[in-house]
Amino acid sequence: MSRLCRSESDAEQSETLVEAALRVLNTADPVEKAKLGEAVATRWLQGSILEPYHQSLDFDVSDRPARLSNVKLVSPSLMPKLGKAGSLQSRQAILHSLVHTESWAIDLSWDIIARFGKQESMPREFFTDFVKVAQDEGRHFTLLAARLEELGSFYGALPAHDGLWDSATATSKDLLARLAIEHCVHEARGLDVLPTTISRFRNGGDNQTADLLETVVYPEEITHCAAGVKWFKYLCLRSKNPVTSTISSGDAEGIETDTQATEKEVEGDSQMVIQKFHSTVRAHFRGPLKPPFNVKAREAAGFGPLWYEPLAVKEPSLE
Image (cartoon, rainbow, N blue to C red; front, side, top):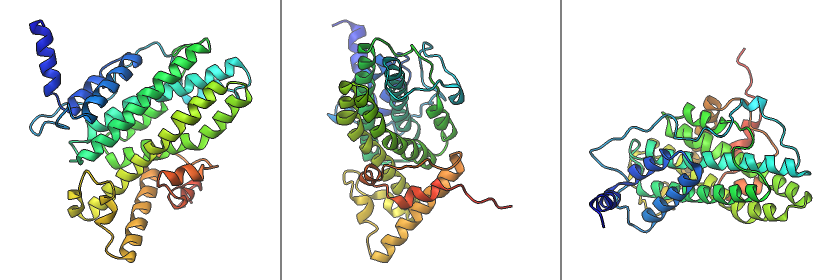
């Protein structure tokens, strides 16, 4: 083994998760980004990466992750209609849109780790949850991009918009807002529309894409929304009582059990969290949420109607 290879190997073994996340974010090619993300996730989950971050070192996180310039970006309002999957052209357009979304989902997952994990003194479980999300998003991108090529197209063949990263930029200073907008509102919107998308592919005769969306992407996206809800709750309860910041990072139920003294307290905590969600979304998301809602999938993510139905109504004017 050469001295260079040995030094690179030693550097990898000593790097923290945040450093590894930054390497992913600084990789421009989405295919390579997904591969590197998978490797980093595997190392973290297997215990090869020991620490989430350096206690004494801080690293700058870029305002925008590295991206290739092969995808033509347009304003969301100028995006061409995707159609209803009745034609090959429409199926390609829908799939291209999904691939683009997943490419940003990879960046969003690693960004929340690198940008907020140390800054907000988040427990180890936070890092693990979003590593798993990042791993899923990378797999979704890889599978959907491969399927797009099987349909005779490729990622970059059509225009796309960067609305997801616009929201990330707007919430780059506030983890609570990032969780609410990106990992609750946008993720849940995906759950709302995916069943219709799946049906359209089936009706268009493309069962292979429909099966991929239904058996791989859809169930895993529910867990991604659940991660957003879970850590939004955690931050709200921690701000109410800093003692809860010491809950066991290895026990997902710890978030609830430390606050379950009485039913009245639990109900009060729940109302406080939901009210905070409403105020956060209204401050950082333009306009009301769009029904119809996928109540079953949202419920599976821990996201009951009280969280989102009031946000589907335009806030009354103060005038």
